[in-house]
Image (cartoon, rainbow, N blue to C red; front, side):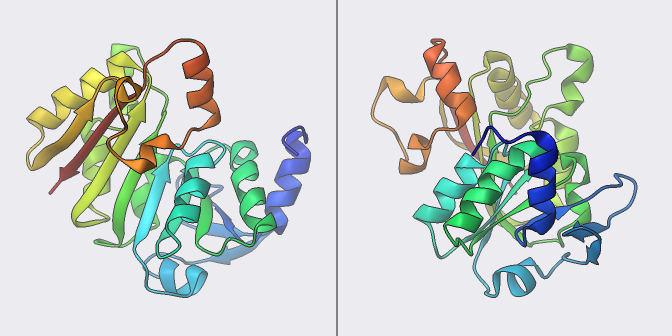
Length: 230
């Protein structure tokens, strides 16, 4: 299934009812299917999921493995995997379609645009799973836990919303700890620079993405931070 070429994957996505795409980063419009514009801001639960369950985002979701695993574990929550790469999203979206999973969807957009598609206090929880660490200092503000991104998240989360960062990268891990220590209202609830060195603190940490499996094979340690930015 994963060997399908990019053009085939893009064609599939256009037929999926669980994928929304933003083609123009300068405009807050979403397209569902081939050319059907939709407005989802503030109505994700009602219009897509058909319920009023808590909404959880997975940012930099890649192939969507974490969104799928979380959706399977928590049928009473709604999950949206967010990534700019349609060919990556295809795998998770396809699994959800094939397994008739109604509580998971995917949003293809730049994460810089995330506040365009959700109302204030709409998001209950955010996972950031193995994002690009942008190791050059000149690109620090592109890191998904940098203050500019934290400011964006603040406009859409509910009070007390939980954040999870899972990464193999030492630089991103230390950067996040330092920025959270400086960020007004931030509170680190738990941190671990090697989650598999002892029994896992949370069951959700046992889910592994394609990238995490590769990191573990290469001897990398997996790090995790749980925090709020009230």
